[in-house]
Length: 231
Image 1: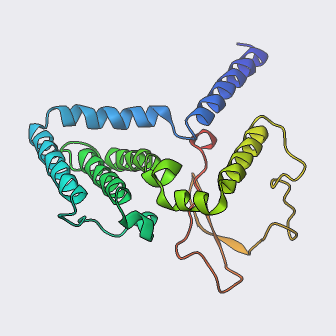
Image 2: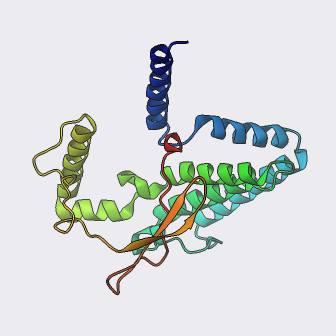
């Protein structure tokens, strides 16, 4: 096969892979499918696990019903997303409890299934957690008491600012940067730098650790993983 023709085929593959990576937010669809098939296959032949989840769902529904009548307190670890005073009032306390119940139920559903590899179990738990968090009541103005309170206090100006930010972000995604685009960073002017060094290296990655220059640092280190398409 001529080199020119081979290069064309490779370029075509790279273009498709790049679009798939953008559509899946950098997650490999083949890896997700493999993990899901591993879980689904073993879960389908685990009647004990299925019965356990059904019983847990009934217990959750019963606890939620009692909580709606003010007869019980939620049995969950504190979640900072629902720590404000507004989340302690009805019906927002029910929204937060229902979310935490469903989050834990989904984690239990994808964990502890006999036969599933640890790697696939961890991936399923991670993706399921992300999907559940995306549907959290704190992410929607109608079910977030803090947003509702801010809207009333500001006469809806916070929603107008949010809509403006959304339109600006949409314009940038279409390739139309605005005059005051925050992407126009300049090192040392509006982009901070810190000394760093490679603390681990193998055939696949280099792990760079940056040293803080101030006394205020993030409480936990942040690991940035590039999209699978770049590996």
